[in-house]
Amino acid sequence: FTWATSTQMPAPFPLGSETVLPLEFETIAEVLPSSYAKHFVGKWHLGMAANISLALGRGYESFLGGNGGQIDYYRGTANSNRFYPGQPRSPRAVGPTLGAALDFFDGLEPFTQIDAPGDYAPDYMVTRAVDVIENLDCTESLFLSYNDYMLHTPIQAPLDPDYLSRCSHIDAQ
View 1 (cartoon, helix red, strand yellow):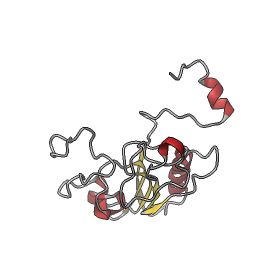
View 2 (cartoon, helix red, strand yellow):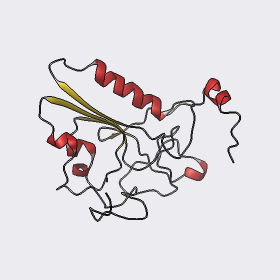
View 3 (cartoon, one colour):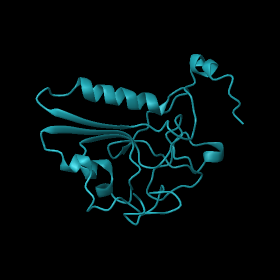
């Protein structure tokens, strides 16, 4: 897709770039009828140069997630040591991620609730998806786009000992 839309780069829509899904390419949320409730949870990764290029600018009425390709599940930061102007710095970015940009949002606002040891971004995403479904007005149809980060790196299990024991046979090196 990125080659067909001339948005190819070493990584499509990298964090901090001006590259976005061109506005002439409509999202499904933009073409669905207004009778649908349209919500987005997870990895947007279609550009972030301006609010119009974010999920809320592309037809969705709510958004919880990140705009780049991957995040640290415990901090909600972009998996990068670079800080991008205009993005808030994570209050939990320490050590090697000192300059890491927060890339986890509730709508357009930074989602700063990932602030205690053991907090886990995917848990917040699942909770939001369930809340959207449970609070749906039964007169509306629902389009919920849930795009999990857990399909690729970083591989970060919840800090729950039960999860960690299931993976104890894996060599993390």
